[in-house]
Image (cartoon, rainbow, N blue to C red):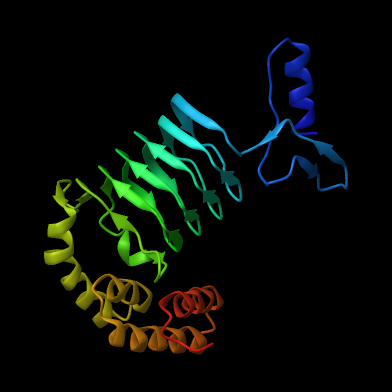
Length: 239
């Protein structure tokens, strides 16, 4: 009712409305077993020159072969969303949740990424160029051992003072101290990801093992899942 009634009324009023499936299929079944067909899916779709997506929910959506160009997202949610072969150009992200998101074969160019929560985000074969990243981006995202994030030219990182520094300076002068801090404070997930960034593979193995044991002891099943993903992606463990 919440979806179809609105569409019906707007179409009767003469407005052009498209129903979009959040999955890879146009066939959608509602909570009461009623199946209907949408007009399209998030595939081969261009979002261009859109002034603002504000407080929009895109959780658990799938985007395939899309382009997002000159758009702005404010206060929106992309939890558990998949982006596959999607290009982002001149996009502003403000106060967004990208928790558990997966970016696969994606490109970011000239984007503002400093105000994102990408905790437990999965980045596979991703290119970042001419962008500003969050200070806490690398400690809390997954990277694939064989296809790590490719940092290209003119990438900067926002620091707590509000200024930006180059990615080179961030990697050489900030990451080593963040790594020590997370290790000493027992934040094993963040420490393991930074060990990956700093090519400390032997320490990474021990850190993941310590974090996994800690999560088991306190029955933190959410973190057990994340450490299992780290084990698989690091290729340091025989599962």
